[in-house]
Image (cartoon, rainbow, N blue to C red; front, top):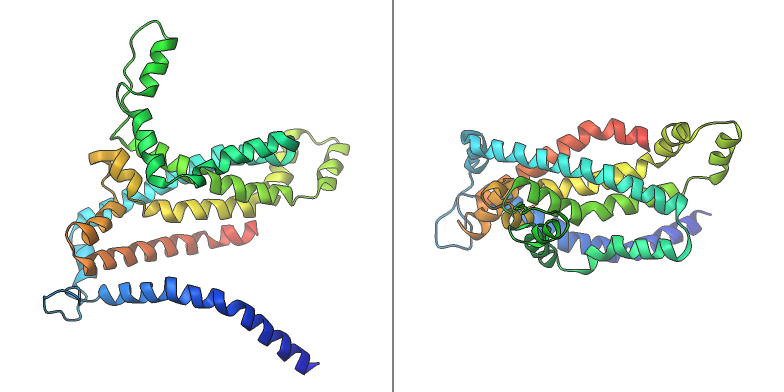
Length: 285
């Protein structure tokens, strides 16, 4: 029996080895290198002399603009996550409980369509729609009897719209899987006992599907907190956020140690938020 268990463990280890190797090469090694850079006074591949220092981390607390941008990015992530949940969960419910056959396939195609296009293409498409004298203006002018000028480009609203469009499929797909896993006999039993739709939704469907909803919210909140492409292109001067600040340190200023330190501060803050939310996530599971 013990020999069989060892054989199964060796086979499982052999099957998991490629995945762990990929994680080591593609995730842990780059993170380790960036962590090393964050404690240097200058990037080691430059001509400048470098030494180990904590100045990059103390710089975050010395300049209040960094904390302000971090707070603004977290607020943006919370807004985008909330909007995605409010829009995505009803869509997932309709897909899982109401729509069948080819109609469901067509709706799924529309949901995953953003994944089939390049992110820059999606962002510049929104720039065409949201700019002044753009598609929104022409559509409203065709419907309304008076001239309308709607210019949402280079605003916080434009950034929110672009990010919601990019990340909405995550919460729809995770919620859909959780809703599909609910035993239909539970719903039928509640109906047979006279429970109205509102009670079934709030007391049965929502609690049972909460793990998928929470997973989708986490998948949205974490990357949005560090996003930089949508704020840079759609936000203009209003899109200066923590993610664009980090990008500037690597691309424009070429201060890799400070950019790495700011990145790990963001990672630490996000991990703290997830740790504080872990009781809710555990209850959902």
